[in-house]
Length: 283
Image (tube, rainbow, N blue to C red; front, side, top):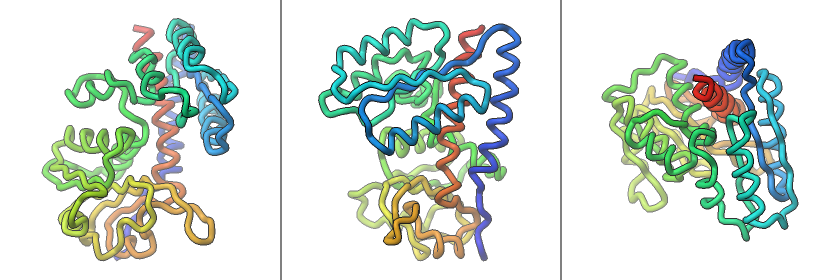
């Protein structure tokens, strides 16, 4: 058996078309959904991510503002900029690109963003909303994973899902989203004693630890759905995920590639969250 690919690029295109249509409907009411992206410092990877986010906004009919600052920007000045954006009616979503320079407390900055504009889904209010099943913004990467499962018509009810990784950005919210869809969820991490014993029971595996080959073919139940959130480099310098793709695709039922899998979905769900923020503000 060779697994069917879940194509993140193709699904992203479909969702971005929907975003553009909904954005056009808002524009007809005189509202242009707006995203502010704040970049502090000159981290090369962050610069690429930010550029891609701004371009995605413009391509989908959203208004975007990019604010770049030197790495020497003080925490007080950054918090003041966030507060100004909170009060700007033309801005519906605020994203402060991480990581921030060491002298700035990232959590303090995230908590300064209005929950109504927290399109990254990192605010404690957003996490609490997800935890309790209330309306709020879901973090973009796990939200994208849920859309991928939805795209293949996968019913999570009663299924066993294993999430490898416990970060606040992917692992924990991923587990909560799967739980909301009535899956039985196991979270594994660096202290898990027998990872293989857990993954072999899984109908769905989400690998999100940032470590190559954390999941190999002998760890996967035949027919399982494997979502690879990892973004690493192999010995040749090519992008690869957390999953041994060549081996696992011969066992799994569905699998996401790297690149072209979960990655494109992350930015797409940022657009969806920004659009929803604008739609809520318009009510």
